[in-house]
Image 1 (spheres, rainbow, N blue to C red):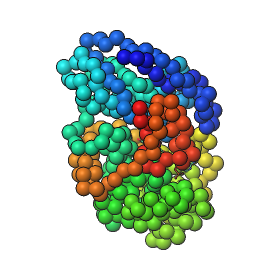
Image 2 (tube, rainbow, N blue to C red; image 1 turned 90 degrees about the vertical axis):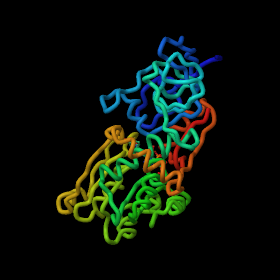
Image 3 (cartoon, rainbow, N blue to C red; image 1 turned 90 degrees about the horizontal axis):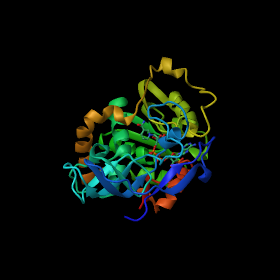
Image 4 (spheres, helix red, strand yellow; image 1 turned 180 degrees about the horizontal axis):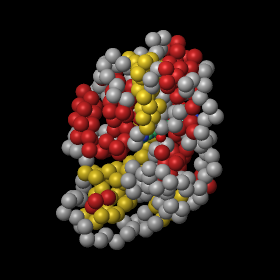
Length: 330
Ligand code: NAP
């Protein structure tokens, strides 16, 4: 095989990362040990949580090591196998990240269910972001038919899946997104209302869109969106705290004006990581596989071409440059 280029974490960012934090380097091809496979990557995932891993702090996943390749979700084809568990030509998922090819023990690679879907969907609606939407909405928030659901970053990968799962389950959905085009797409996905948070205070728009209040808030953004959800919560509302992208580069929000409504409205808030629900992936593949097959859940991708573009794609997440799942095609 020719070279094997990978993106290395060169330095740790303060605030918003930039290109100086990354370096594209040829790391060569590791010799294939007994029990190992080699995979040629076809698709790389870029995800907001990676921003947290660029900091040298303890969290639910260890920080990226300086001078080492960036880890993260990828899908590729097996090109060499010294494992009885994988055959050349199989499509697999792994977390070895932003590199042209990955080699390692078979245990580092996941087989994918037999479903007639395109490879990149294993990084979107049938992958990490779809599973996050599914478990966050249905298990964490225990959302059910008839609930009024508010979801932020609704034109993103997780948010667009939340909108569609909620509609498939008979809920009323209000999504927020930045800009008229994104809001139009959120409505196309079936949302009953879409809020352009760049066009005025979220709290005002949410109270207007949900005059009866909300039963569920699926938080992808934090800050003013979370505060607006406190203001709009009905009795016994449930908040699934999935992400707070507004704060990943800027630090924690200064204050929540409406937080005391947690008490009077008996709000239940729970943070979660999708891996908490790995034991229930069978349910996810059954339900999401069915919705994808029937067209009840559709996907949209913003695709960057070539490994050279991976940091740009990643940085674009913090500027709202994606509709649906942000991906890099190799
Ligand atoms: P995404 O929503 O596809 O992309 C990020 C979007 O966030 C952008 O397109 C942008 O949309 C919005 N955004 C960026 N900066 C913002 C800001 N300052 N204020 C408001 N909105 C902002 O990304 P994703 O992969 O689906 O992830 C969504 C959230 O879920 C993230 O918070 C992520 O960390 C979290 N997540 C959590 C888990 C878990 O297990 N807990 C797993 C996966 C993802 P607009 O143009 O609409 O602003």
